[in-house]
Length: 628
Image (cartoon, rainbow, N blue to C red; front, side):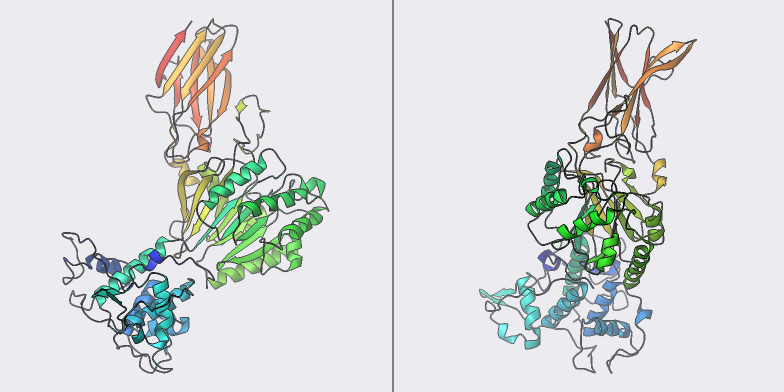
């Protein structure tokens, strides 16, 4: 069971308060003929379409009929999506066995939603009062993991004395959360706790509860990697990113997937760890949970001192908010950790190296198996540093509900290959918060055909929302510029597999027909090529542009020189890339009878078309050539 969920008053805003709903003029296939042109029309259709409430037979919904206790538990049972076969047998109540509602009653008792009228009777046909309805909804909210300890005085209600003693906590909770505002009569407020609830009222209540509950995330956390405290511009990047993340509200957790520091592995010194802790503590001034994994080369060395470095992180971080609440100290010392945050399982795995022994992996495998056995459909989250590590793939390959966050390569998270599901689970590359690499290897301008721009004005992260139906949504963030990147990714059991190589066959980045290609040849020694940016495709924006200067050799045009320009679109939202204009100048003794070709490549190195001048039959784009 979840230990802490946000309960927003909007989720239950209409419980016991029925409001007017806009009614469609007609519907082609109404399931009931007694709810047309009514204020509860949309609600009845919603609960029917979502298999939460059914009719009473003969095409009737019986909207004015009173709600019975059996109907109420059946609705909550339906909301859970439980198979009735799982709750066959005796209910524990003498008046509720061998009936259509028996599985729901058995589930409600075992889950704590109800304890019955007495220890042995449930009273399934008894009509529900409004205070009973409140009690059921509070108990169900507790079962779902909401915090329900809110309480407010009932002094403002004229009939507060009519609230039964057993219902007072539920009524006070409902008032505190804005669930109940009461009804007004002659300038006074009334709770009407003993009035019976009707089916049309309950349909509205359930629609708003269900849609509100599943529309709000039950847990939110932020994930990032490669902070590299101690390198250039790292404090600025970290502070900007944390401030932008906090603009989304308080996080339930923060995840850092390796290379928190820059030189701990070499210095075996805690100074950069202390600095990391100081910045995080200044920017995140609320209670939260933090998990981390350590990377090679920067956090942990490939040497015996790896155990010593890991101990420095444990000593300086874990006594504060870095917790692994069910991990033995000896396993943490070897580099594996297991936490439960808001009821969800988090595992972290330091990069294998010194100190990573078989016993740690054996323990971790057993912990994952136990976590999955608790709830086979619930996602769990893993932090490690390097993608595609064999031991991590082996651990997660059988768990499509696993979401693993990695760093290391410093590619932009704007690339659509930053999410992959080819190994049986979901892997998220986090982009990094220190510097940008266009292809995962070239960090600096040591490649003469690669222009990376200012690689240090770069910080990216992923904001993660987890929903009650086990859907996970991931929004990519440009922390340095406080902006979102691209469309949010969405993971669920129904859609697993959408983020695999099959995306390569979808539309790719390309140039529009009216994309400008301008060529200026000056004094026959300088050839300046300028061009518009390409439009993004299913794989995201262009990753780089190849600019080619061609000349005829024995009748065929061949490339004399080329230059690759890193795309700056990776720093913008894929849907709203601004107008960008690129330029490069070739220098030579002569540019006689030349041709030019500019090609945009996506993250998989694929292209659709090129801007072309001078190649017969291949010219493409809005071409303007000036020869001086």
